[in-house]
Image 1: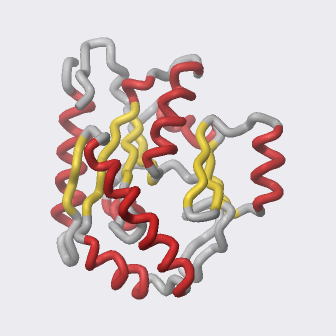
Image 2 (image 1 turned 120 degrees about the vertical axis):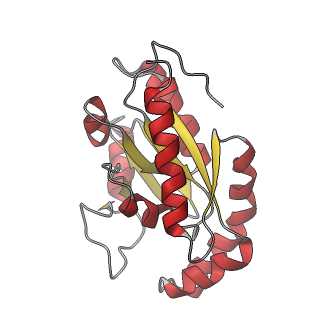
Length: 197
């Protein structure tokens, strides 16, 4: 767990990490903070809105932006690219933010924050969202995901679970208990925002 000091910036970015299907995106809707809206190359789902649930672009566009060195953090998740530019975190200057990301993305974001003026790696707080494995597939089916996408994400789950030991916090999100999980995250946000102040 990170040690917060009196010099730690109060506007942290809370990275929600965990396997697909653990409810990370649903949790961001339960917590009254702005969420980082990342660029992504996967297809937009029926219930999603471009610019709200993500900036949906092609792989070609993503790679063009990479050539121009626009990404401050990026990751490849089951064959799809995700990334953010500095523009997506500007609200962090005024208030804390939430960010749904995998562990590789967290590490890249920390490296980016080492180089960005006005940001520090200590602002990045990682929270692993844990859901029992048996619940993941049923959630993905309910979300309307394709069978091949479900298989790829279940195959990736073991690697994602391993990140729990690297994160600053672990929060359980069992079926039917999303309000309790959101409450635990809010407690973490409150405690880390005011520690050392």
